[in-house]
Image: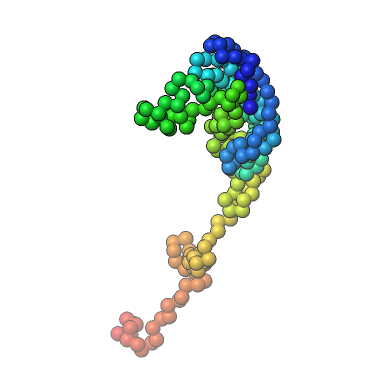
Length: 206
């Protein structure tokens, strides 16, 4: 919670605040986020306006996650900017119901709770939107070997022999037995026997 009492309600009044708070749980996405309890450095500029308090700020936080290519740990920092209006509950038009869609607009409006406002939902949205959707340990990360899962960054020359489906093993063996022209090797060719003498097929007998 942040306090606006020192700011007052005089339109145009300004106040700057810097604070370090602990990160809430689940501040991130599946592959990367801010660890629970990590320091969030929040810098705010609060301005009193007719409708309420306009808050403009920046949040910085450490990130922890994993590379989507090689699954190695990824650590970096995120910086996110935000701006939000916290309205006075009694401000004119804050609870307007007559216009179409007024109920939906009221649900999206954030209100001051007395002289305090809760910045957590604003910071959460800003940080999550600033996160990389596909974090990588480095831009040219080669990832993992699809065959064995080896880390290709540690072994750039990593290779595998061609793997033949066992269902094609017989065809592979048969192809290996063929010569370059697709015929059987000489030692495996079947020699044609000469027709027996007297069979009538020998032209010299005629």
